[in-house]
Length: 110
Length: 115
Image (cartoon, rainbow over all chains, first blue to last red; front, side, top):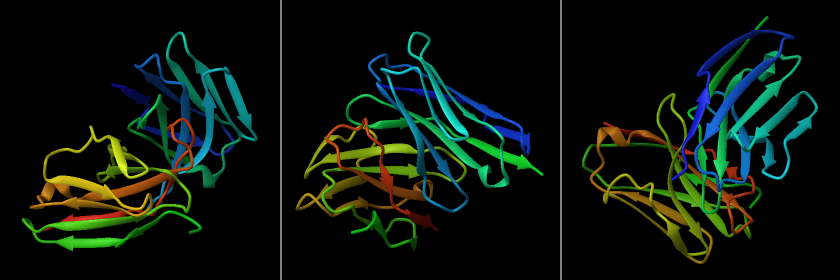
């Protein structure tokens, strides 16, 4: 079955700097890669996703890249703000379910 | 409904007791998923429903765990003879698509504490 690894587990960046979270997946049949943000005590919320037929997708300060050959995908947050502090989960999906990475706790230093 | 609704929001139970957790998905969503999140951990897949059938129940950790879905809507996750390691937040999600390659909408979860 699918296995998703996520790094780093914790990340602290200065406000205004960029943050990058990286994931790898194992199942070459996976074709959908969502990213979820979970604030403390709240439910995970979808922030951006990418499908296997594209290599990059951007939405304002957030971008995702996908390298299908290497089975890598990454989340990039630019011009970080305090409200970006949260746990971020990458995930990969083929048919029946989405498998999540272990999460990255992102802290934004003022 | 407007979102995925889960009940109860919190449940404290004694070790050995049975518990039932309920999920009411977004109206019209055919796919329903249960995940478990232990404190500070990631999201562990438990079971997937398409309509009333469960084509993938590979994540259920033991035969003490079972789930059903009726009328293509509400789902109940049952944990029998609860153990302390069952303590976690149980999250339900639903999707309008038959395949999981579209984003889920999660409920707020049920925080289960086994004492």
